[in-house]
Length: 285
Image (tube, rainbow, N blue to C red):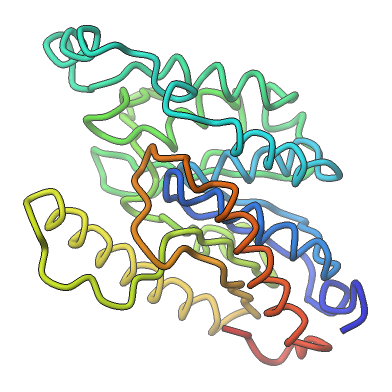
């Protein structure tokens, strides 16, 4: 495939969709690098949870996004997103409904994103949160960026919920972890999906309570993903580059980030090269 051929033949507008997945979303940086090498450029960007960080940095300064994201992820550790001591965590739990404050997340967003509002971004961007009262997905695409980013990352019980008007907003992963339906609703004529969640062939029997909860949630997200991508493919071409880890990645474990990015880039590069001239009448899985 010659450089740029796939990108030039995708119907426009093209949406880049970044799914949630905590530390595992670092793999999306490698996928994004390969997509750019293939000539793909977004006209619209939609992200959920940690994927919204990748999406907003791309929307903020598209020409340097891969370099900046690589630097962010490879220098990230638990203290980058969580600054509370054990004592402070206990105080948080006793005084509210969350384990950790979100001030470190807010600082990360403020330091890494030049724009302060959605309108200031170079590429149109939206992120998705969950309305806990109605159970519906809420697409945030105007106003203050940091508030919206905190909302899409507000894991219930872990970080504070974000109140906007009368709505109590939580992490968007519960209703739209990979927001392809939202990209369709926003007018996408083609979609490139960046999903960093690990692809695990068989989990086996759960080993303990945490493993049971994790496996159940993963099964829910897998079903959501399969259903939403299938729905999107009935309407527009959808590309889903590979590169996900083959084993579980703990939410705040950033020790394998560099390997994830390199591995994902190689896998996604082969995927795009194998497409050749993209046929807009089909979707590549």
